[in-house]
Image 1 (cartoon, helix red, strand yellow):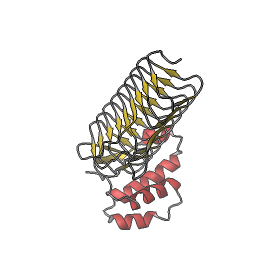
Image 2 (cartoon, helix red, strand yellow; image 1 turned 120 degrees about the horizontal axis):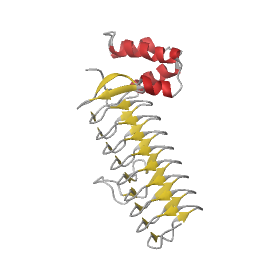
Image 3 (cartoon, helix red, strand yellow; image 1 turned 30 degrees about the horizontal axis):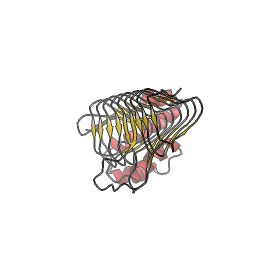
Image 4 (spheres, one colour; image 1 turned 180 degrees about the horizontal axis):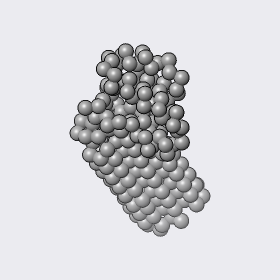
Length: 254
């Protein structure tokens, strides 16, 4: 059902069984797939919304990037199937650098959270109330971003990582770890998250051993990485590759 007060641009592509609430504005270059619900007073432009998404009231998706260098170059925001955007969430579209902002499948952005231009968020990611992802931030699958967190532009949050409420993240957070605090520091591994993902005890022990070598062995980071790079564990290799590809440096224990 499309409410009679909604304003729909003629260019919008709206599939079957889409619900659009009162006083919504669906602007140009918008595609909304089947069974998605758009709450009242929401504003969408230059975006693609997947199947079975739930967008609550007063959400903004695909609006111009908050980047002073942006000169109205064509770009979009993409929201994956099954994703939920709660009240007052804002998702900006990309800049000319990538042309897109991407939010994966089955994500949950809680009220007033924000994803800046050119962000790339994986599947099954939770972003809690009031948290903000700066431009060009990358978030891996199954990550958890606690409430009122600020993630600095170009930072990366690894797969399965968990960030404590109120953290300020200015460096990369390795996969499967936990961090917290102003200028976030590592506080161990996200053991609960790994168990929920179905990792075996042996796989978790391999990650624990890697964490000890990286941060508790007193080895130089380069030496620790050399020691781990031939690991048979795919998860450990993932952590090693993540660290090696870091441009901002990684969050470490206090």
